[in-house]
Length: 405
Figure 1 (tube, rainbow, N blue to C red):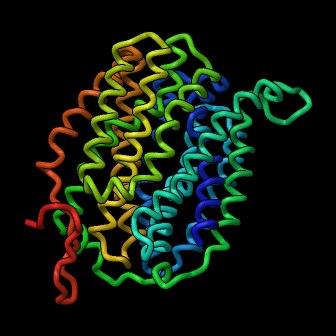
Figure 2: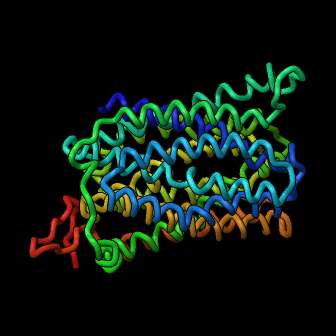
């Protein structure tokens, strides 16, 4: 089971590593869109994901078909990404990106839910060891893609040109990942079915409600800057190769930190992980706002690994201590919708406007200050995790220091 999950994460994140760092640059350079237009096209991903993620999550939990749902959305991601490369106009790209978002925005939360359910008996350290292979796959893509472009990117005998290669290559990775997902065994935790009214009870649970608010605010500070990062690099005089090098530095610390996230969880608790992640992202984006030196920008990208291990791993692990087992997919989809959905919509739209109408540093000044403030306030706002009372059972309190209010 662990091998198949690791293989899925490796292949899926290889595709993400081809698409995510370069799609904004593709829109600007290959399709000649303005910063505002790039922001609007990219905003289609979280806008559609805001609806798609909870719907897919609810379906997976109500039907008990989590593995099958993961397979379907991964295939859908690959096919829609391949089609996206055929659109050229601003409005066509917005529509095609919305189609991609129906599937692509769901894969991360669904694969997290499936991984946590499949390895529930092994503890949170097992999730980190499997999720680590996703970062390895992302790193492989970021390292190799610029070299691929130099060799094949502008070959007139081939159907795709320059950054347009991200679409067929991502398609191939997604198709291979879907095969790995389809081979996962249906263990009991993967086939549990939720009950009517479960979601309403979860949304009334104080830790769940506050986590959703924290994730929303955190992603306002995270998503716009990272989506607009290729444009920021070109504004500083860099290009696609510089974007690739930046991502290498982003991932250097991420691999070991994610692998060790289970041990860190035992020492700091889920709230401690999220706080450290926000602090790191605040330092990272504030530094980017204050410098024009690409070498300094490159070095500070090491903070990305701390941010991912903190926020993007800490929040799902906190939720795992809050949500009933039969609502894993719905719970992970809800925090994805709050963060990668609602938070991203605000962050990308505002960031694109600031990029065009103020300066390239403005989104990073705002995001850095917001992340630092949120890190300072987190422990005062987010309670220690515990599960809601259900069917007359006692509260299942986490091992984190503290007790439910």
